Length: 498
Image 1 (tube, rainbow, N blue to C red):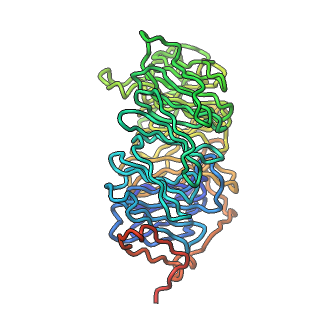
Image 2 (image 1 turned 90 degrees about the vertical axis):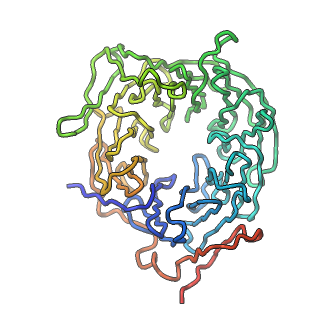
Image 3 (image 1 turned 135 degrees about the vertical axis):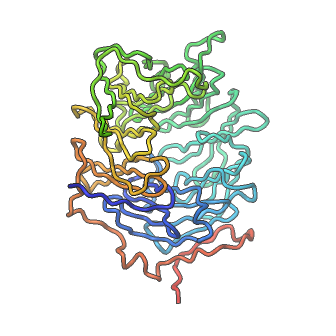
């Protein structure tokens, strides 16, 4: 019999980018656990006046970034940011007045390295790049308020960011570490929706508002315009525009998802269309494997194969324009497969091969699909999260006879469920995390898709219980003065309580 341990929390817990750790705010402490065994390796005290106010919980680390030799985690609320280092319990930092008096923090995240923090102020007034190494901040005025308005170049860390002043879009290229302005490009876009580096760092893609049709501008790494793709449309037929965009993780081809239920792949370097995927309302191709989720009288979920023709359930006809089109395009680790969802049929996931216009598989669910995640090391393994209160995860693997539905126990079912893959090279099992704002649980999945117990011989590393709560390791995070010269406060050595 497989046993599970529910971990209590005060808000949604967040796994580290490498999947080895899970950060949890529980009552008046920030707890860091090993994901494999749920063992606490660090526990940091929090100021009690902020228990119910933490809006942001973030880890350092991002895809393509250089390893920093440590994992840092931040908590933020109001205009204050607190940072800890999992690898060094005697180090911490506090950034007071992170928005320089311009309201509360609208968005915050680590930059390219663990020594850099991006802070977006309210109303899109500015973004400040704070350096934990120099205790200085670099301000960028009038950033676009979209989450896709900036991106870091893989491997080098050059920052590309979109700004908008006087109703005019500008692309800024900043040097890593110093934020020195390397180039500024005036864009011809009406309202740029995002910027994204290619995985090899050679190209930048900027896409325009949907009102401009399929308009993507491709720039070289130094900011020179290379090509503008308009989807082959003329001024009298501009189409319904772009909703999402993503680069292939393998060959750096560019994939565009439109509001017209179409996904187009542009070839690498030439950026000419090579193939297009259509999310049709009726699936009648017998070569496509279609799976439908079924719920039994005992509320057991499973997949059954559907016979063509099949019509995925569509949303209501009075849905707004923003609720149509391709919502996401997610590539697997080697770029051989991609998963999409069209908002016209929100409960359906389409799995494609970039070499074929026909879908590899289609999965139809009872509830709308929120997000999908490919496994970080298993090429054909996909995690599907539906909009459910029940702690349920849907799994697809090309090697299985049928997709699987995994249900994990949670002590308290209340609020939205979040699902994520976890990863540990020492364990020959797939780990996934399911949780809500009150608790989370980690399930170990065998290669054939069944729940499995973690082997007892797995060893854990890090501080033990006698180290975690040693008074000599407790950090005194009392309220810091709001004086200008006290914006940053570091602690290299913990103070003992006497």
